[in-house]
Amino acid sequence: MLKIATLPERERGVCCPPTLTLRPERAAGVSDVLKALADPTRLQMAIALRDAKEPVCICDFVGTFDLSQPTVSHHMAKLRDAGLVEVTKRGIWSFYRLAPDLPVAARRILNAIG
Amino acid sequence: MLKIATLPERERGVCCPPTLTLRPERAAGVSDVLKALADPTRLQMAIALRDAKEPVCICDFVGTFDLSQPTVSHHMAKLRDAGLVEVTKRGIWSFYRLAPDLPVAARRILNAIG
DNA sequence: CATACCCATTGACAAACGTCAATGCGTTGT
DNA sequence: ACAACGCATTGACGTTTGTCAATGGGTATG
Image (cartoon, rainbow over all chains, first blue to last red; front, side, top):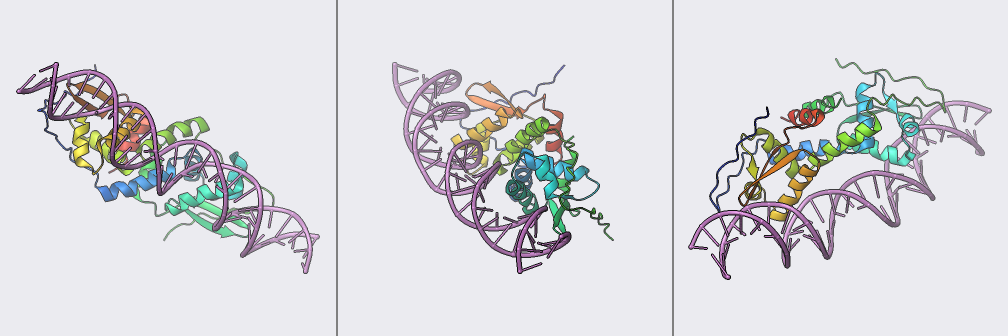
């Protein structure tokens, strides 16, 4: 049996602004993280890095997704700009891993995805 | 002392596609939820509804955010289209609440935000 | 040096997004 | 009936986004 919240009574012209648990500036920050993850390719990349034991290089992702190399690089750059991912270079390769100092909110969001 | 994952050795021309823990179709679904939340206004709306004891009507949000009524309505429609929110009408008001049958992933993502 | 390889950046373009003004529809109160 | 209110939809607009082709820079191999 589902408990439905009762609808509040109202007088015309009277509004009841809800308390904003999430402050605007913080909302902007979290929203930036969500924007970075709100693309199927980037989401799969991020989750793959979350679950990978070793850093992954771009060429691996280029082989995985049906996308051009510049597009893959572009997506990874977005994850990097959002602070979700770190890059380390070795020879001609760029290896990416989840940022070790990932903000708590970002970490929790990533872990929330099965 | 931070433990850095060792970078893998490589031969030129050899790529190692990572295992995609997140399947493409599921990635698309989760990505849609993230897209719906990846806007400061919609994020604040969703979190406000998450924490509200009673359903909230549009006019309340219009008073809260510095946005026009059509814009607020438009944002709420996006949350509705994403299945995150349900509407119940009473008189001239439209009251919104978090969808009771919220997908587990969506619920976890919302709860991951402090 | 020359070649092959990996990657990032730039430029370009269509598609999607966020916003508002204007409009229309249903409901309430006079 | 009429006016006022709450809300959704439409049309329009500038901005952002996702994608690729082309280019350039860096690094290894011959």
